[in-house]
Length: 378
Image 1 (cartoon, rainbow, N blue to C red):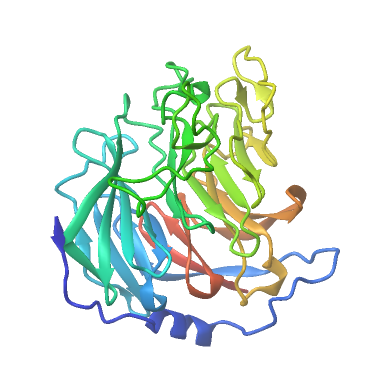
Image 2 (image 1 turned 90 degrees about the horizontal axis):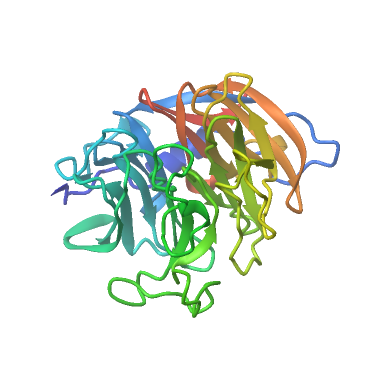
């Protein structure tokens, strides 16, 4: 592991530049009917296979590269790596450095990656004055993976201050081990843990399966195939998950901020709202709020964020997402967990792999070929 201990001379500059470059129009939601948002993609940097990102201390944006490096974005592009674990990870299959997150107050930095054996790993670093403290590194959670695909790997802190971790069903195809519906494994789940409450972590006492001898206490939701990207709406606290489909249907799942957890999103009995290979819909199945088939160019949904920035008022409150194969950036109009409209935003991020929500709620699109683009008003 290599950690840059000198400051990356960028803290806060990206937000200032973005603020000056973008309109300061009101972020109030326009009255119905919704006007189609007019946006443009402005390329702001080039990375080596960017995979994830997060808002950082001092208004920075931190970008993870799949091979194992983390860089900070500035007006001039990406700085030198502030973290390098490239000697500890592998990029075969769908592996690599897959997720990064800061806790509230930016006191700790978390990385989610697959190690040289392919084991999903979440590590923690202390942060001081915006810098990673290498000697503080510790492993929070590990999960062995039977195959090299469907790792999931996204991590986010929820509005409740707990760390949520998305893990795929273990890979291969069709969930051969039945992990999606098996509550005795962490695979095919969204987990919820308290990394600061114990060593290596504590279980929040209100997790839905605490005390159930047939279920893992870490589980928050289940029935997921490959929840590659998920997010919390910074305005409402609602949870949205982009779950990659098997061969026919891509889906976006939703849970309200007041959820007590325990949602069953159906995999592998269901693919979207459709029985999978003769499956039976579970009685507690929570269907997706949006699905689309693969008759077009789409092949792998890339979950994004509900837009809460100020630069594009017509996009306010809409969920922005894309597809790895199609690349078109789209938006869902939402009302109380229901989709009231779907729009094509008229821009394409290429082979889109992730979105990043930066300072002030503005969004960035990451393309696997290296592009980092900000969604700006057209």
